[in-house]
Length: 142
Image (tube, rainbow, N blue to C red):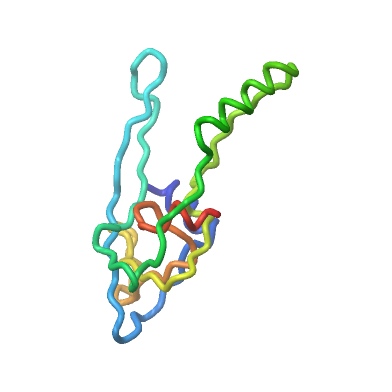
């Protein structure tokens, strides 16, 4: 959980503020996962903070959810061209990818369980960047 919170801090994902009148917060929760090695043994435990996006209201918390995705035909074409010309192909993973997308809408979430700032319990997190679980998170990356 500390690793996830460090990524959120590094990416300047939110700021703590007083909840503006007329606005509501979206809850957050921790999702836990075990990363296994090739032998099937637990390599490490991972925690991810996600917003309860199912509580978002269209037109209030988000406007669009469309995110551009490469079509399978396009991917096959690129692989075929690479094979034909002996070009190398690389695959990569962007750590905390959703946390890099800027938000257009004003979205407020509760402080994460276990990480509520002492003396600022009444404050909420105003998101500057997307958080996993938000309906607009995939679109925010583009």
